[in-house]
Image 1 (tube, rainbow, N blue to C red):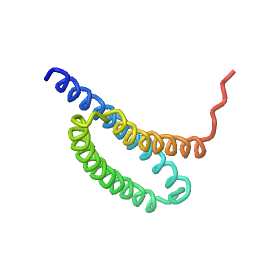
Image 2 (image 1 turned 90 degrees about the vertical axis):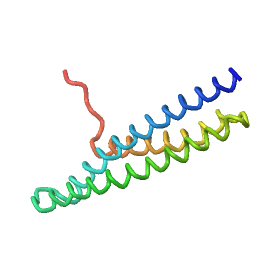
Image 3 (image 1 turned 135 degrees about the horizontal axis):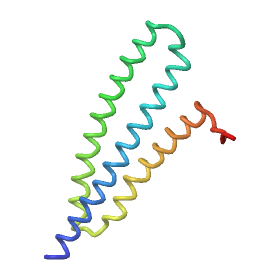
Image 4 (image 1 turned 30 degrees about the vertical axis):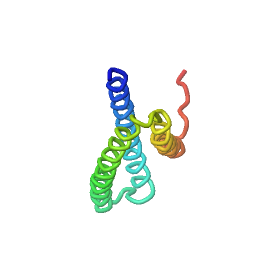
Length: 120
């Protein structure tokens, strides 16, 4: 009984870690989107700047809803797999693609902004 409770606690800790990785991706990808659209689409045009702001809001709402659905599905999957004993495998199946998305968004930011040079 205690082992099962500890497994459920571990499942929710892993779920919380995946939740944090998802938020990390949302923040980085939003920054990438704003930089990319600002450089390639908006430029100095004020009207296009307003459009970029609108697209940013639409992107954030759509990604937030997708993230919410993903978290609900993941929580249900973790609860079901506690009894089967394959919790770590399920965690890596969810966290791996999330880390890949974070890497790709961060790489896009690096390409757009370029490497920084130390001052001195």
